[in-house]
Image 1 (spheres, helix red, strand yellow):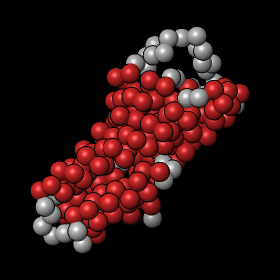
Image 2 (image 1 turned 180 degrees about the vertical axis):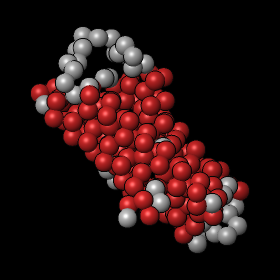
Image 3 (image 1 turned 120 degrees about the horizontal axis):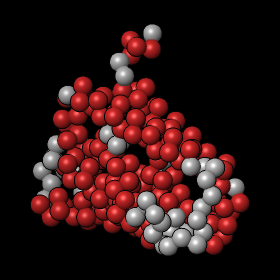
Image 4 (image 1 turned 180 degrees about the horizontal axis):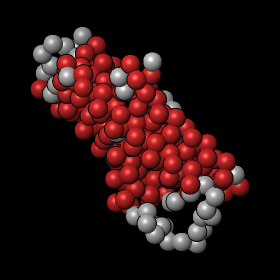
Length: 214
C-alpha cells in the first residue's frame, strides 16, 4: 500500500471515530450552546490536543504498554471514569441555573483557558482513546513506517479532531440551537449530565476487578 493510500485510510478511520457520539461531543456541543462560540472553539482545540497527544504516544508504544501492564490500563480506566462522572454531576447540578445571557463572551469562571483545559482533561480521561488509535495504527501502518508518515499522522489527527469539533461549535453556537437549548435547558443539561455520568460509570465498571461484582 502506498504512502498516500495508508495516510488517507488512517484519516478516514480517525474521522469516523471522531464523529461517533460520545463524551467529547456532549461536552463541546454543550459548551458551544450554553457559553459562547469562543469557549466552544477553545474546547475544540482542547479535544484536538488531547487526541494528538494520545495518537503520538500510541505511535511510540503507549498502546503496547497499556496492553502489557494490565493494572495500569485498569487504573487509567477507573480514573478516567471517575472524571467523567464528576463532569456529569457538575452538568446535572448546573441544569437548574439560569444562563447569564448578557454576560461577556467569556463567562465568569469559564475562561477560554479553562474551557480548553476542561476539554483536554475529558479527552485524556479515556484510555480507550489510546486503544482506538493503537488499533487503527496496528491495522493500517506498515511494520516500519516511513518517517514522513510518522510526522504526518499526528498532524492529520489534530486537523480532523479540531476540524470536526469546530463544525460542532459553529452549529451549536448559532441562534437556532441556542434558542432550543434555552427553552429546554433543564432537561437537556440533565440528559447530557446523565449520559456523561453513565459513560464514566461504564469505564469504572470495566476497570474494576471482575470479582467485585460477584
